[in-house]
Amino acid sequence: MLLDNAYIVVSQVLILFILIGVGFIAGKVRMINDHGIRQLTNVLLVIITPSIIIQSFQTPFDVSLIRGMLIALVSAIFSHLAGAVIGKMIYRSSPDDRSRVMQFSVVFSNCGFMCIPLLDAILGSKGVLYGSVYIVVFNAAQWTYGVRLMTGGKEAMNFKRALINPGNVSIMIAFPLFLLQIQLPEIPTIVIGHLAAINAPLAMMLIGAQLSMITLGSIFTDRDVIGSSLLRLFAVPVIVILVLAAVPVEMERILFLACVIPAAAPTAAGVALFATRHDQNTMLATRNIAFSTLLSVLSIPLLILLSDFLMGY
Image (tube, rainbow, N blue to C red; front, side, top):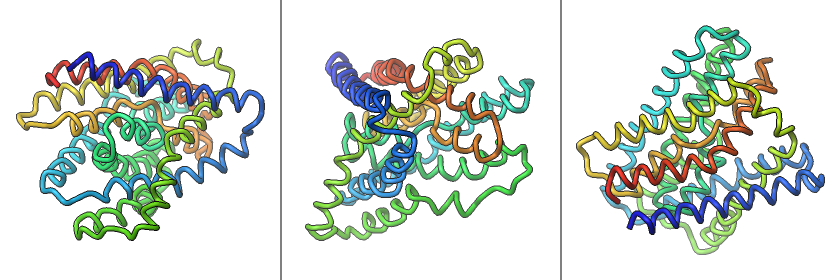
Protein backbone atom coordinates (compact mmCIF):
# COMPACT_ATOMS: atom_id res chain seq x y z
CA MET A 1 0.00 0.00 0.00
CA LEU A 2 2.82 2.41 0.89
CA LEU A 3 4.50 1.81 -2.47
CA ASP A 4 1.19 2.28 -4.29
CA ASN A 5 0.62 5.58 -2.48
CA ALA A 6 4.19 6.63 -3.28
CA TYR A 7 3.68 5.95 -6.98
CA ILE A 8 0.44 7.95 -7.06
CA VAL A 9 1.96 10.92 -5.21
CA VAL A 10 5.16 11.05 -7.25
CA SER A 11 3.30 10.68 -10.55
CA GLN A 12 0.82 13.45 -9.69
CA VAL A 13 3.59 15.80 -8.54
CA LEU A 14 5.55 14.98 -11.71
CA ILE A 15 2.52 15.91 -13.83
CA LEU A 16 2.21 19.23 -12.01
CA PHE A 17 5.96 19.83 -12.38
CA ILE A 18 5.72 19.24 -16.14
CA LEU A 19 2.89 21.79 -16.27
CA ILE A 20 5.16 24.22 -14.41
CA GLY A 21 7.78 23.53 -17.10
CA VAL A 22 5.27 24.34 -19.84
CA GLY A 23 4.54 27.66 -18.15
CA PHE A 24 8.27 28.32 -17.71
CA ILE A 25 8.89 27.82 -21.44
CA ALA A 26 5.87 29.99 -22.33
CA GLY A 27 7.29 32.75 -20.14
CA LYS A 28 10.80 32.43 -21.55
CA VAL A 29 9.59 32.77 -25.16
CA ARG A 30 7.40 35.70 -24.06
CA MET A 31 4.18 33.93 -24.93
CA ILE A 32 3.10 35.08 -21.46
CA ASN A 33 4.47 38.38 -20.17
CA ASP A 34 4.26 40.02 -16.75
CA HIS A 35 0.99 41.78 -17.62
CA GLY A 36 -0.55 38.52 -18.80
CA ILE A 37 0.54 36.74 -15.62
CA ARG A 38 -1.21 39.35 -13.48
CA GLN A 39 -4.40 39.11 -15.54
CA LEU A 40 -4.50 35.30 -15.51
CA THR A 41 -3.69 35.27 -11.79
CA ASN A 42 -6.78 37.42 -11.17
CA VAL A 43 -8.88 35.01 -13.26
CA LEU A 44 -7.51 32.08 -11.26
CA LEU A 45 -8.04 33.66 -7.83
CA VAL A 46 -11.41 35.33 -8.47
CA ILE A 47 -13.15 32.82 -10.75
CA ILE A 48 -11.47 29.42 -11.04
CA THR A 49 -10.30 28.64 -7.48
CA PRO A 50 -13.70 29.63 -5.98
CA SER A 51 -15.33 27.32 -8.53
CA ILE A 52 -13.35 24.28 -7.38
CA ILE A 53 -14.08 25.15 -3.72
CA ILE A 54 -17.83 25.40 -4.41
CA GLN A 55 -17.67 22.16 -6.38
CA SER A 56 -15.96 20.37 -3.47
CA PHE A 57 -18.78 21.34 -1.08
CA GLN A 58 -21.45 19.91 -3.39
CA THR A 59 -21.32 16.60 -1.56
CA PRO A 60 -23.81 14.66 0.60
CA PHE A 61 -23.90 15.83 4.22
CA ASP A 62 -22.02 13.69 6.72
CA VAL A 63 -21.33 14.51 10.38
CA SER A 64 -17.82 13.08 9.93
CA LEU A 65 -17.10 15.83 7.41
CA ILE A 66 -17.91 18.50 10.03
CA ARG A 67 -15.62 16.72 12.49
CA GLY A 68 -12.90 16.59 9.84
CA MET A 69 -13.27 20.29 9.06
CA LEU A 70 -12.89 21.14 12.76
CA ILE A 71 -9.69 19.07 12.93
CA ALA A 72 -8.45 20.81 9.77
CA LEU A 73 -9.25 24.18 11.36
CA VAL A 74 -7.24 23.44 14.52
CA SER A 75 -4.38 22.05 12.42
CA ALA A 76 -4.32 25.17 10.22
CA ILE A 77 -4.23 27.50 13.22
CA PHE A 78 -1.43 25.45 14.79
CA SER A 79 0.55 25.45 11.53
CA HIS A 80 0.48 29.27 11.30
CA LEU A 81 1.36 29.65 14.98
CA ALA A 82 4.28 27.22 14.60
CA GLY A 83 5.57 29.16 11.60
CA ALA A 84 5.25 32.47 13.44
CA VAL A 85 7.18 31.19 16.46
CA ILE A 86 9.93 29.57 14.35
CA GLY A 87 10.29 32.63 12.11
CA LYS A 88 10.48 34.99 15.09
CA MET A 89 13.09 32.86 16.85
CA ILE A 90 15.34 32.47 13.81
CA TYR A 91 15.12 35.94 12.27
CA ARG A 92 14.54 38.29 15.21
CA SER A 93 18.13 39.58 15.06
CA SER A 94 18.26 40.03 11.26
CA PRO A 95 17.98 43.49 9.66
CA ASP A 96 14.34 44.61 9.48
CA ASP A 97 14.14 44.66 5.68
CA ARG A 98 15.16 40.99 5.58
CA SER A 99 13.64 39.80 8.85
CA ARG A 100 10.10 40.79 7.90
CA VAL A 101 10.26 39.06 4.52
CA MET A 102 11.88 35.93 5.95
CA GLN A 103 9.34 35.61 8.78
CA PHE A 104 6.45 36.11 6.37
CA SER A 105 7.96 33.47 4.08
CA VAL A 106 8.14 30.91 6.88
CA VAL A 107 4.59 31.49 8.16
CA PHE A 108 2.56 31.68 4.95
CA SER A 109 2.33 28.89 2.40
CA ASN A 110 1.04 28.91 -1.15
CA CYS A 111 -2.00 27.00 0.07
CA GLY A 112 -4.42 28.10 -2.65
CA PHE A 113 -2.31 28.50 -5.76
CA MET A 114 -0.25 25.33 -5.25
CA CYS A 115 -2.26 23.16 -2.87
CA ILE A 116 -5.76 23.16 -4.31
CA PRO A 117 -4.56 21.53 -7.57
CA LEU A 118 -2.43 19.05 -5.61
CA LEU A 119 -5.20 18.21 -3.15
CA ASP A 120 -7.62 17.70 -6.02
CA ALA A 121 -5.16 15.49 -7.93
CA ILE A 122 -4.17 13.27 -4.98
CA LEU A 123 -7.18 13.33 -2.65
CA GLY A 124 -10.13 14.45 -4.78
CA SER A 125 -12.94 16.84 -3.85
CA LYS A 126 -13.02 15.70 -0.23
CA GLY A 127 -9.38 16.73 0.15
CA VAL A 128 -10.20 20.12 -1.39
CA LEU A 129 -13.07 20.52 1.08
CA TYR A 130 -10.76 19.98 4.06
CA GLY A 131 -8.00 22.04 2.46
CA SER A 132 -10.38 24.96 2.01
CA VAL A 133 -10.45 25.37 5.79
CA TYR A 134 -6.71 26.09 5.73
CA ILE A 135 -7.34 28.86 3.17
CA VAL A 136 -9.77 30.58 5.56
CA VAL A 137 -7.16 30.62 8.33
CA PHE A 138 -4.45 31.67 5.87
CA ASN A 139 -6.46 34.65 4.60
CA ALA A 140 -7.37 35.77 8.12
CA ALA A 141 -3.74 35.50 9.30
CA GLN A 142 -2.25 37.12 6.21
CA TRP A 143 -4.36 40.27 6.43
CA THR A 144 -3.90 40.63 10.20
CA TYR A 145 -0.59 39.18 11.42
CA GLY A 146 0.94 39.44 7.93
CA VAL A 147 0.17 43.18 7.66
CA ARG A 148 1.48 43.79 11.17
CA LEU A 149 4.63 41.84 10.38
CA MET A 150 5.41 43.65 7.13
CA THR A 151 4.73 47.11 8.54
CA GLY A 152 6.26 46.62 11.98
CA GLY A 153 2.85 47.37 13.48
CA LYS A 154 2.65 50.79 11.79
CA GLU A 155 -0.41 49.96 9.71
CA ALA A 156 -3.76 48.81 11.08
CA MET A 157 -4.60 45.17 10.51
CA ASN A 158 -7.10 44.78 7.67
CA PHE A 159 -9.93 42.76 9.17
CA LYS A 160 -12.20 43.48 6.19
CA ARG A 161 -9.72 41.96 3.74
CA ALA A 162 -9.20 39.07 6.16
CA LEU A 163 -12.87 38.16 5.77
CA ILE A 164 -13.86 39.45 2.33
CA ASN A 165 -11.70 37.85 -0.36
CA PRO A 166 -12.42 35.35 -3.16
CA GLY A 167 -11.40 32.26 -1.18
CA ASN A 168 -13.47 33.10 1.89
CA VAL A 169 -16.46 34.37 -0.09
CA SER A 170 -16.61 31.12 -2.04
CA ILE A 171 -16.61 29.16 1.24
CA MET A 172 -19.32 31.49 2.64
CA ILE A 173 -21.42 30.51 -0.39
CA ALA A 174 -20.52 26.83 -0.46
CA PHE A 175 -20.76 25.94 3.25
CA PRO A 176 -24.44 26.90 3.73
CA LEU A 177 -25.28 24.98 0.54
CA PHE A 178 -23.51 21.97 2.04
CA LEU A 179 -25.26 22.27 5.42
CA LEU A 180 -28.70 22.74 3.85
CA GLN A 181 -27.94 20.10 1.20
CA ILE A 182 -28.87 22.44 -1.63
CA GLN A 183 -27.67 21.00 -4.92
CA LEU A 184 -27.03 23.50 -7.68
CA PRO A 185 -29.04 23.09 -10.90
CA GLU A 186 -27.51 21.09 -13.74
CA ILE A 187 -26.26 23.97 -15.90
CA PRO A 188 -24.44 25.91 -13.13
CA THR A 189 -22.96 22.60 -11.94
CA ILE A 190 -21.59 21.87 -15.42
CA VAL A 191 -20.21 25.41 -15.78
CA ILE A 192 -18.50 25.24 -12.36
CA GLY A 193 -17.11 21.82 -13.29
CA HIS A 194 -15.57 23.20 -16.50
CA LEU A 195 -14.03 26.13 -14.61
CA ALA A 196 -12.72 23.85 -11.86
CA ALA A 197 -11.06 21.62 -14.47
CA ILE A 198 -8.88 24.55 -15.56
CA ASN A 199 -7.49 25.08 -12.06
CA ALA A 200 -4.51 22.71 -11.99
CA PRO A 201 -3.05 23.40 -15.46
CA LEU A 202 -3.50 27.16 -15.24
CA ALA A 203 -2.14 27.45 -11.68
CA MET A 204 0.95 25.37 -12.48
CA MET A 205 1.63 27.18 -15.77
CA LEU A 206 1.40 30.52 -13.99
CA ILE A 207 3.94 29.37 -11.39
CA GLY A 208 6.25 28.36 -14.23
CA ALA A 209 5.75 31.68 -16.01
CA GLN A 210 6.55 33.54 -12.78
CA LEU A 211 9.75 31.53 -12.36
CA SER A 212 10.79 32.43 -15.90
CA MET A 213 10.83 36.12 -14.98
CA ILE A 214 13.77 35.84 -12.58
CA THR A 215 17.38 34.73 -12.84
CA LEU A 216 17.27 31.29 -11.26
CA GLY A 217 21.00 31.24 -10.53
CA SER A 218 20.59 34.10 -8.04
CA ILE A 219 18.32 32.09 -5.75
CA PHE A 220 20.98 29.51 -4.88
CA THR A 221 23.47 31.98 -3.37
CA ASP A 222 21.38 33.64 -0.65
CA ARG A 223 21.62 31.75 2.66
CA ASP A 224 18.51 33.43 4.03
CA VAL A 225 16.50 32.25 1.03
CA ILE A 226 17.75 28.69 1.46
CA GLY A 227 17.25 28.77 5.24
CA SER A 228 13.71 30.17 5.18
CA SER A 229 12.72 27.71 2.44
CA LEU A 230 13.95 24.78 4.52
CA LEU A 231 11.97 26.06 7.51
CA ARG A 232 8.84 26.54 5.38
CA LEU A 233 9.11 23.22 3.56
CA PHE A 234 10.42 20.94 6.30
CA ALA A 235 10.42 22.39 9.84
CA VAL A 236 6.80 23.61 9.92
CA PRO A 237 5.17 20.62 8.19
CA VAL A 238 7.24 18.04 10.10
CA ILE A 239 6.07 19.60 13.38
CA VAL A 240 2.48 19.47 12.09
CA ILE A 241 2.90 15.81 11.05
CA LEU A 242 4.35 14.79 14.42
CA VAL A 243 1.63 16.60 16.38
CA LEU A 244 -1.16 15.14 14.23
CA ALA A 245 0.36 11.66 14.55
CA ALA A 246 0.49 12.05 18.34
CA VAL A 247 -3.12 13.21 18.71
CA PRO A 248 -5.26 10.33 20.04
CA VAL A 249 -7.91 10.84 17.36
CA GLU A 250 -8.40 8.44 14.47
CA MET A 251 -7.96 10.20 11.13
CA GLU A 252 -8.48 8.88 7.64
CA ARG A 253 -5.67 9.41 5.14
CA ILE A 254 -7.54 12.10 3.19
CA LEU A 255 -8.02 14.26 6.29
CA PHE A 256 -4.47 13.76 7.54
CA LEU A 257 -2.89 14.69 4.20
CA ALA A 258 -5.34 17.57 3.69
CA CYS A 259 -3.88 19.03 6.91
CA VAL A 260 -0.28 18.29 5.93
CA ILE A 261 -0.14 19.36 2.28
CA PRO A 262 -1.15 23.04 2.81
CA ALA A 263 1.34 23.24 5.69
CA ALA A 264 4.02 21.76 3.41
CA ALA A 265 3.43 24.12 0.48
CA PRO A 266 6.12 26.56 -0.68
CA THR A 267 6.21 30.22 0.28
CA ALA A 268 3.03 32.14 -0.55
CA ALA A 269 3.00 34.36 -3.61
CA GLY A 270 1.56 36.99 -1.28
CA VAL A 271 4.98 37.66 0.25
CA ALA A 272 6.03 39.47 -2.94
CA LEU A 273 2.75 41.37 -3.12
CA PHE A 274 2.94 42.47 0.53
CA ALA A 275 6.64 43.33 0.22
CA THR A 276 5.87 45.56 -2.77
CA ARG A 277 2.89 47.17 -1.10
CA HIS A 278 4.79 47.98 2.09
CA ASP A 279 8.15 48.94 0.53
CA GLN A 280 10.04 45.88 1.77
CA ASN A 281 12.67 43.77 0.00
CA THR A 282 10.67 42.59 -3.03
CA MET A 283 13.61 40.85 -4.73
CA LEU A 284 14.28 38.79 -1.60
CA ALA A 285 10.60 37.85 -1.47
CA THR A 286 10.62 36.76 -5.12
CA ARG A 287 13.70 34.61 -4.57
CA ASN A 288 12.02 32.94 -1.59
CA ILE A 289 9.00 32.06 -3.71
CA ALA A 290 11.13 30.72 -6.56
CA PHE A 291 13.52 28.59 -4.48
CA SER A 292 10.85 27.13 -2.19
CA THR A 293 8.62 26.32 -5.19
CA LEU A 294 11.42 24.44 -6.94
CA LEU A 295 12.40 22.57 -3.77
CA SER A 296 8.78 21.68 -2.99
CA VAL A 297 8.73 19.35 -5.99
CA LEU A 298 10.93 17.06 -3.85
CA SER A 299 9.82 18.02 -0.34
CA ILE A 300 6.05 17.53 -0.71
CA PRO A 301 6.25 13.90 -1.94
CA LEU A 302 8.76 13.12 0.83
CA LEU A 303 6.47 14.58 3.50
CA ILE A 304 3.45 12.71 2.15
CA LEU A 305 5.45 9.48 2.24
CA LEU A 306 6.54 10.29 5.81
CA SER A 307 2.90 10.80 6.77
CA ASP A 308 1.86 7.49 5.17
CA PHE A 309 4.73 5.69 6.91
CA LEU A 310 4.03 7.11 10.38
CA MET A 311 0.29 6.53 10.15
CA GLY A 312 0.50 3.14 8.43
CA TYR A 313 -1.75 4.10 5.52
